[in-house]
Amino acid sequence: MAMGTAFAGLQLFAFALLPDAVAAADTAEAGTYTGVWTAAEATGTAVGPYLYSAVLALGGFVSSTGGAHAPQSDTALTALLTGFTLLPAALMALALALQRRCALDTGQRLG
Image (cartoon, rainbow, N blue to C red; front, top):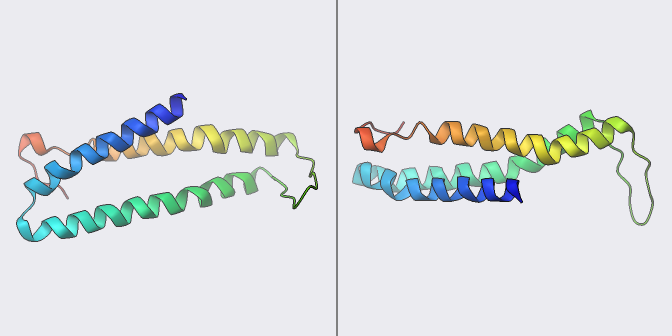
């Protein structure tokens, strides 16, 4: 629940910044900025599963199909836990660090 709350806060923070950033941008740049924003968000959504699968692969996770059960090593179980908890936390911290660069209240331009 804590991770979901943190994610919701990051999403809300980012969407709250978007109108201010568009208002601060030149009229010609507003559409470009919004398009880059949407592309970055879609890319982030697509990259997440790849990063998670990379953590699982590094941990030696063995996939199975159907009703078959594949025994997992301790490192695979640790990778499962790490990929589901620490990886999202690290990505959220990175997103927050990038969002903190937005300084519209000081008159600075984005970019």
